[in-house]
Structure formats: C-alpha cells, structure tokens
Amino acid sequence: MEEQTPPVSVIIVNYDSGDKSRECVKSHVEDGYGSLEVVVIDNGSIDGSVERLEAEVREHPNIRLVQSPSNIGFAKGNNVGALHAR
Image (cartoon, rainbow, N blue to C red):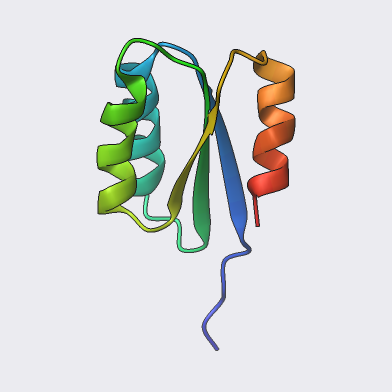
C-alpha cells in the first residue's frame, strides 16, 4: 500500500523581497513534496516583487499569490495566509 503525504501549506510573507521570496517559493516547489501548497502574501510591495512572483504562480498551480494593498505586517500577513490556506 502506497503511503500518502499529508497536505501541507507553506505561508510566505513578502514585502519588497521579490527575488528572495521567489527563491524560497522555488525551493519549496522543487523539494517535490506531494501535497504542498505555497501561499504568498504580498504586503503592498513597490519593488516589482509581485511581477516576479506572478511568474512562479503561472508555472506552478499549487502556488497562490494574495496581494494586500498595504503593509499589514508579518503576523497579520501570516493570519491572512492561514485564511487562504486549504
């Protein structure tokens, strides 16, 4: 009998750190964990982070990008991520 992996949600809070957040997303996706979803919360970045992260979202259906119009902080960003996690 094949063992199934439990579903896991990874929440990444981003603020003007597009390249680092993109590397983090890619690292999780490339890890190959079967039941993984990555939820990226962007805290109103103005450095082009969203555009760079959207490229990852287009390539991987298990990544979701949620945009906040302003910087709501790390803790609140994680709470928003939890609301969007499956």
